[in-house]
Length: 217
Image 1 (cartoon, rainbow, N blue to C red):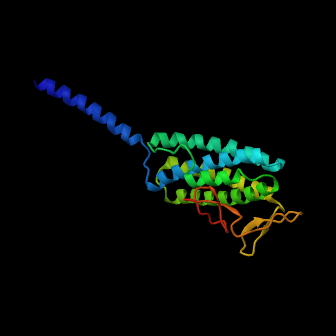
Image 2 (image 1 turned 90 degrees about the horizontal axis):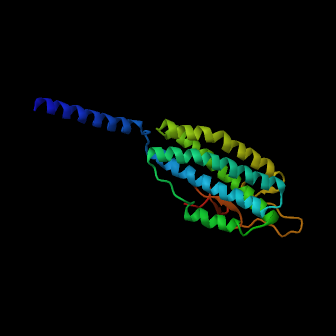
Image 3 (image 1 turned 90 degrees about the vertical axis):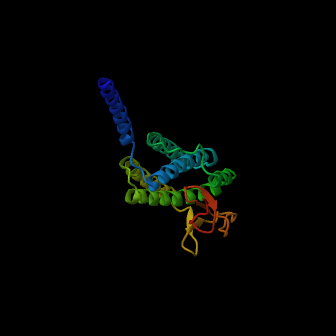
């Protein structure tokens, strides 16, 4: 009887030890880490769709090339996000949120120079906001793996921002408030209007707004 109890205790110790090891292997995520994984995933999904739109709707080679770059880089970034989220047990959405989907649909209605101006303004603001989120994760996150995602993504997003600014060139003009708005075309058909500019929402979506602050939720 005593021997049987000893064997049972030994088996129990092995089982508990294995469970403890499995728990310890999980990344130590705080709320910021979990929120960031979802946000970055949605940014990736939105940027991929926006990049595809650029390749479909623009006739400017620099814009279509940028669109391909966004698709390629954010697809690669999102693979890492998915791996870390799966390991950490954090569920990720299948699509951008409702506001992002709506605003991507609005972008899809534009073509030519109008599309280029609005797309560039939206992407520049969106990448600035993404950099802010990456910095927030680096300062407030607790998981080394999630913070590594932010660290690895930062130079990629920064390079995108530099390329977007370069592509913008002289196609944008500052509005009186200091924000960027589409410059008038030679035909006079394009002019800034309070509700006509596009800006990314909190998760990199694009939404009609008078300033780059964004309205998406």
